[in-house]
Amino acid sequence: MPGEIHSVLGENGAGKSTLMKIIYGALGPDAGEIRFDGRPVEIRSPHEARALGIAMVFQHFSLFDTLTVGENVWLGLDRRTRLKDVEAGIRRKAAEYGIEIEPERPVHTLSVGERQRVEIVRALLTEPRLLILDEPTSVLTPQAVEKLFVTLRKLAATGCSILYISHKLDEIRALCHACTVLRGGKVAGTCDPARETTASLSRLMIGAEPPKLQRKAPVIGELALRVRDLSLPKVDRFGVDLRHVSLDVRGGEIVGIAGVSGNGQQELLAALSGEDPRADTGAVQLFGNGIGHMGAGHRRRLGLHFVPEERLGRGAVPGLSLAANLLLTRHEALGKLGWIDRGFLRNQAAAILDRYRVKAAGPGAVARSLSGGNLQKYIVGRELDALPKVLIVAQPTWGVDVGAAAQIRGELIALRDKGCALLVVSEELDELFAMTDRLHVIARGRLSPSIPTEDATVELVGEWMSGLWPEPGQPAQGTTGAHR
Image (cartoon, rainbow, N blue to C red; front, side, top):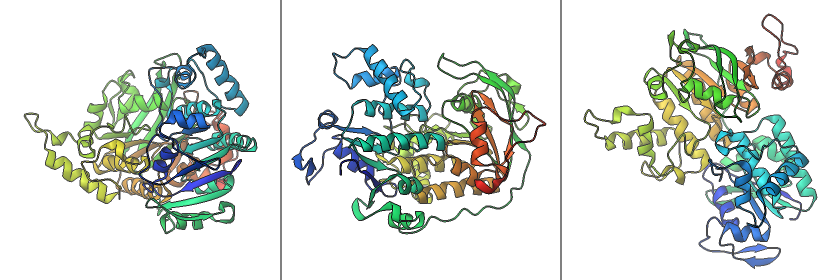
């Protein structure tokens, strides 16, 4: 209905994104009818959808990395519009809705959270009558989510209809007026989310409540990953300088890093994973050995594995099969003469699909054919299956349903209990509170002291996200865990 925020709920692979792409004209339906404003319409392309007043923010972003934010937005507009006018419009719309964005910034320098802001502002600029949002808060902090909700309520108040896809059931209950549940490509039911509990919505979606995380006290082992006084200048003018970053991660513990997107997470992850080998050799140490100058492949052979936040394009090659994607991490599939053992890859991929309950058409399915949540499960499963000594994970449950999120978190905790050292970077505070043993906060390229997760609060972490934390030796303020 006009002015209604309507949720579409379902587990990974239920058909939510496919249905939205049909409405937006990115996919053609096999049968049936779409009515818009009460009349039948045939939407054969996104261009025709936009002409009707339909805008969509995709879960996997449709941005050109080599262009600026402004140029990406400009591409979808009337060619007679000047780029300077588009950039001015971006600034006005961003200011109107409280979204931080720089039109001149190249997209390849943006974090996933910042790219999501670009997609949202691009959609808002079209003054849509129907706005489709596919997992819009999957990589946003609680503060950014609240800002987005204010934006969406303002938009709905103007009469715009919003179709909202999310796996975060508390968000759906707080924001949406109505809910349609999909299961296996069919409508399984409708409800008023305000009258449901998180548990009842979960049962509607996956037929059961997600299992509760089973956590026991960590058994701390030897120091695995040490970072000491790591400082790196930004690679480009829109990046973030890393300044005197220090942290320790020991075997048998999960250390979390919280922070608002664009505060140095990308730069820190690149320095730790080996994508950026500019650090002093001793600034990054693995089991006492300096690895600051080593590349990603060398660090992986020493036992340090990495799950990037951007799954399609960096975590997986979109056009390759799931089996072939294992070549990114399974060098044992290469024989002495360079021959690829395809049987080994197929068997390994099939085992990962089975163990992590990934919905896919077998090991030969191309990566881009999977739903976002299923691809995430496969990538995380691929790294877990390699039995790393140190695992660095960015946004581990981005875009996955409540059942799959619980499974991934449980697997990460199980890996911790086997003695692995884990560093988890996430913008979802509930996830960090549920999984980690200690927490840091990153702000403007600086890293806070660590705090036991049981002593952290949303208020304290929010304060530290502004860079306001005590210097070493000073007590942290408000460190009671009662209001997490």
